Image (cartoon, rainbow, N blue to C red; front, side, top):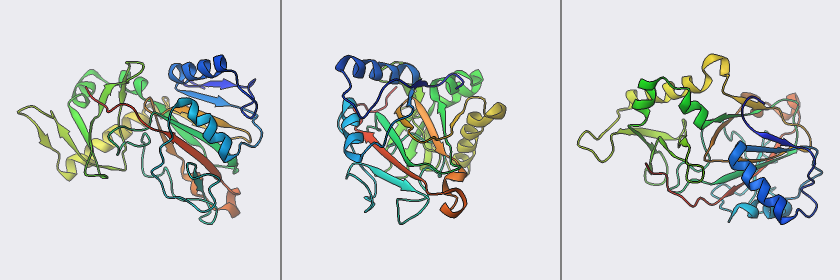
Length: 265
């Protein structure tokens, strides 16, 4: 799995999980950024919400699809009658970058597994550490301006509020501009052409060296993933939108946990 994630095969999430095990899972999420539980039996919407509450209060900002098993479960599909379509395909991102306090965690359960349709993840601290010094120095001067909710502004690079490791607040499909040197006399906002160039630069850094930083998760029946949303960027693959006639029905259930921290330098 490259240098990202921990696979767990000996915990049944549908059974009672002891408090000490829950604490270990929470520690593992921060240490490994992804915890992937294998061979789970069907996890109901109610149970996914119960598991999610281990990490805090749920926060739901999405369209409520009528087939969702719970009001706090985002139901995603390649069939609009079964769930919301075209989700996660606008660019590499963390969930909730448009909020003043982005989601702390995201939890994913593949309710119906298609033949194709990976979810790709990139560890953001590893990405920063892979940058050439001059690139890292420039990115440190950037703030992203979201295209939602009155243009929330976040530093592109900032310390993770729990681990202290440098991470990124990004959404390559929902950034309307960047600000250079926010709060200084050099402060200025990028024009559209410069914004596009910077977004492309970030994208190229993520996929460089034949995507060596990226872990692409091939979903299997019974997979349940808990992610440190502030430490891992992700993107749905093109195949997630292939028709159910071509790859079978895809249904993903996602929950998100209320953020407690506003990104700051």
